[in-house]
Image 1 (cartoon, rainbow, N blue to C red):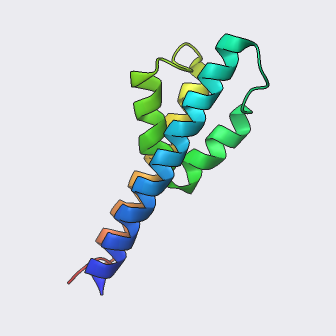
Image 2 (image 1 turned 90 degrees about the vertical axis):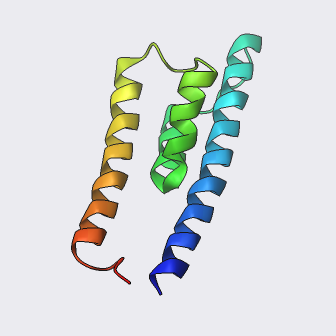
Image 3 (image 1 turned 180 degrees about the vertical axis):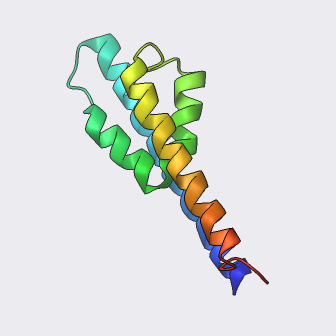
Length: 97
């Protein structure tokens, strides 16, 4: 059962990361063109739904939102919360074979 959970989680994280990376790219392009932007709250919701790896990649690769300490703090907190949840699930034995 745990292999199915881990496979589902990997696919979900990959899909949400792709969506989140695309949202960051869209927002960066909109910023350069003075077009309507993607609200930061929406970017954080995408991160919380599993797209935090994509957000970290976007911040690094696209250099978008990398100069905003408040934004970075929330993104890092979301990533840490996900890591803590996985650690707790593992320690509780929910991911055991």
